[in-house]
Image (cartoon, rainbow, N blue to C red; front, side, top):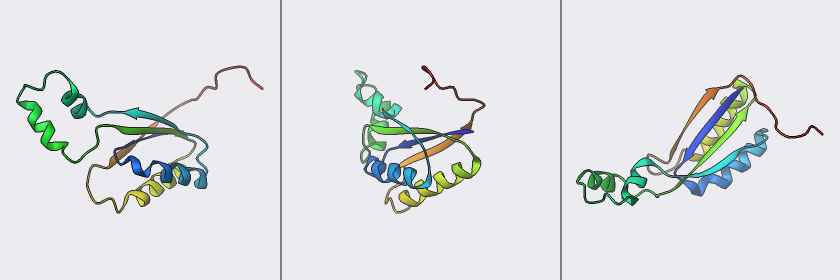
Length: 116
């Protein structure tokens, strides 16, 4: 089993990604509102420090918030299929930095609550 994390800066693609997840058999995912470090620093009270001008220049075109999607996938084959559909959806994004993905192997999952 693997957990796939997607940090999606191009949030306009969220609905299409989730629809493709359903199409290929991904049975669930969790979506969190998230924020990158540079964006958080720019919002802080320390804007007078010269270093923050560098962050500001880097973030001119980006959005301050993003979505982090994570899902547990049962096989390497499903990981490969899921990564491929996300890459296909994002292939024509005109700017770099629209997001990134990574996986982590996991040993076990545990369902919480009373069994049915």
